[in-house]
Image 1 (cartoon, rainbow, N blue to C red):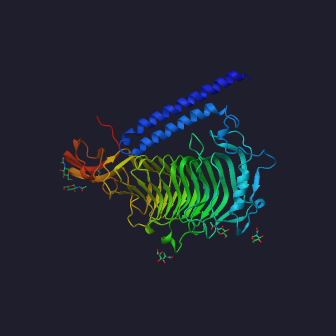
Image 2: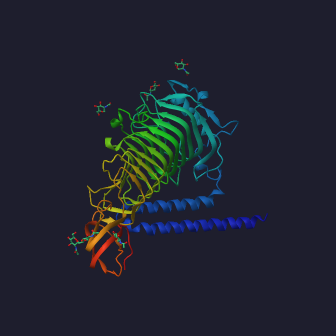
Image 3: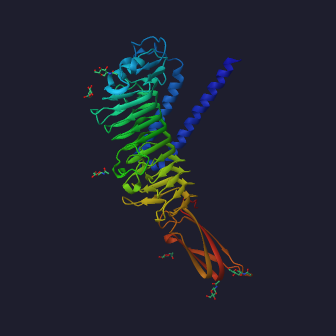
Length: 499
Ligand SMILES: *[C@@H]1O[C@H](CO)[C@@H](O)[C@H](O)[C@H]1NC(C)=O
Ligand SMILES: *[C@@H]1O[C@H](CO)[C@@H](O)[C@H](O)[C@H]1NC(C)=O
Ligand SMILES: *[C@@H]1O[C@H](CO)[C@@H](O)[C@H](O)[C@H]1NC(C)=O
Ligand SMILES: *[C@@H]1O[C@H](CO)[C@@H](O)[C@H](O)[C@H]1NC(C)=O
Ligand SMILES: *[C@@H]1O[C@H](CO)[C@@H](O)[C@H](O)[C@H]1NC(C)=O
Ligand SMILES: *[C@@H]1O[C@H](CO)[C@@H](O)[C@H](O)[C@H]1NC(C)=O
């Protein structure tokens, strides 16, 4: 019951957390400095993390004192209406046509405009009015729209749009998005437009006129149980901001369940993450040229099933274009005839995934850097065509800065195993022997570590052996006497400590 002491504990805890955050942040900066000189983005990322820390601090200490009246200039809804009754706004009440015949753009925009002008409950992030969870309900209808559905101003948060179908009409502007969370008037100081906007239980039919959802500089956006089809450009585009969480959703340019005769003509990108700290969880991508394009950092992909366009037709499941500072985790996902491409991966983790139909992973050299990359504990299944599970694309440049790379423990059926760690056994009968690891090692002409042991049942035989040569991924060993038995060799292409 001793409130002051309890408060003190809270403050101490928070300060502790803050210092943890600072320490982690510093560790991060120190860690990334070796690649920082190579890639300008690392410096950018540093600023990004510092910005986040500043925001966290200022927002935490300011939060208790902020209210609508204390900073009226930040309030987007100076003409806000007092709350009365339900916070659910039905678009049909505003004249939208749930049969999908008449254009409903104006009606939906009017419902949204009313919903976001209710009196809020202070701020979420500073400058973002907390609208308390107002809901814009599509009431299970189908609505034809000819312009993007946008929020009228920036600086809004805690809003939900849910429960129905939006369909682009034939005159919908082709370079825009059905649901567009962007704003020309971003909230002051922080640059975030929106926070905690939830788009749920929606079907978006882009009618081959543009994209599905765009979130620009939005924070903590939820896209949940959405079905997005017939996009020409992008199903979901996330630019800047962070923490857009895309869950339990289905995306495809054409509505198909595989084996589509038009598969080679699929275009567009299902999800394009041009920002940091987003998550895609339990999502199926059933048609598009590229399933997920990633050009931001610290994004997390879990439980995604990509069968968007077979590799053989030029498709890619996930394309990671953050050379030098990748920081991407892909786990427990399913690559169905389409794989992963990562440019200069530095901190990439791919594990517990299933690759079907000769699907594979490409490490593509841009500046020749690969480091901090784990490709472990995956399953690969192919059709005995000799396809390597992991491949190097060195057409632009050879990988010449190879750091800590672990490709190991993958189970492979009908494809060629590639690894950075390998074990070999050979029969020995003579004074020298060679074990060739070219079949399995991922990087050519690179062995960093060798361990060797000899087995022979000839009694009183204690040969001296020496490792003579490891060039060209072949381990060559010589002995001072004839040995009849077998030799076991372990090699590793990864980092080793040397002194
Ligand atoms: C659709 O538009 C027509 C013509 O303006 C109108 O008569 C009809 O009531 C509208 N239907 C709905 C459901 O709004
Ligand atoms: C698109 O067509 C609808 C009628 O179907 C019309 O109401 C709307 O104004 C048109 N929009 C544009 C941008 O031309
Ligand atoms: C695919 O597109 C090409 C041209 O880009 C076209 O000639 C062909 O008919 C299309 N295939 C199908 C099955 O639509
Ligand atoms: C080992 O080599 C010798 C001589 O070359 C040969 O006589 C012998 O049979 C070989 N042993 C085995 C197990 O192959
Ligand atoms: C190692 O073996 C390669 C051929 O595999 C040879 O070209 C090279 O000269 C050898 N190096 C040494 C130090 O013997
Ligand atoms: C020794 O090993 C060889 C095969 O390497 C085998 O043929 C032979 O029987 C073994 N001898 C004994 C005594 O175990």
